[in-house]
Image (cartoon, rainbow, N blue to C red):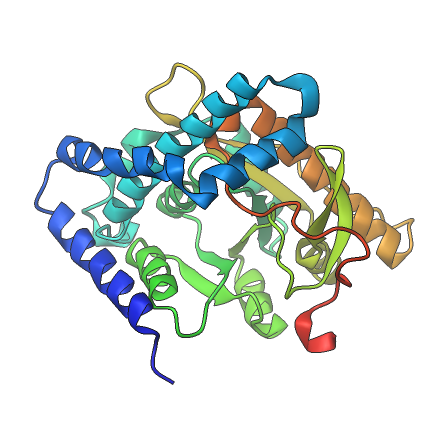
Length: 314
């Protein structure tokens, strides 16, 4: 089947924008994208962001404080668009040119050595992160550090925009594996000593999941990271790339790896591990709330409304 017209138009516009911004200095691109952040204030995404902030923080924040965070998130999304348009024109590190700006924009701290320690075992590494800060810059910065591997992401059928995201990652040297890829594809990456990255902070109804606390509320959480940790006898390594308050550049840091508790039964160990992942993400978000994707439907599904199993099993 052909792609819907609106998707084709959107994808062509995105690729045209990618090409045109190559001719402009970053500052001018930033100014050009700014109006979109203002217009988003009147969209359904803004209403969902405010609802999610109310769910997450309750009475901790006033309506005015929630509106301030939502505004910050809009402007942060504009910044991400600027970065991703530039990433789409980057090249892998071995090309020798086209990516120095990534290293200038993202500094590492010593905690990155935790990834090396896990990789030293020769079984690869599983990295988990959230839609916080700039997760695509995180991936690109690790690639420029010398890590090779893949990310597991959504490959929407008949959606050229999803293809643009895959092409963007390919441009800076990273492969995208579909969320429903064969486990053998993930195994090949890990057996080669590579890294596998997952974004696992949002609800994905079509994947296996469990209801796990997030900001004190049950949230449908994908269990794929715990399944990979069990299958490959590896910890989950939480990594984030955020802009500290008052800083002009991003900082890439790595938290202590999270191990699956082998003393528990399978389901209990899965829920326990993903609960600890959610706790880590929540702590990060509370530090820099303006840099999280509040517009996503994180608490849309409630226990009892939808059985937390993949669509093909329902």
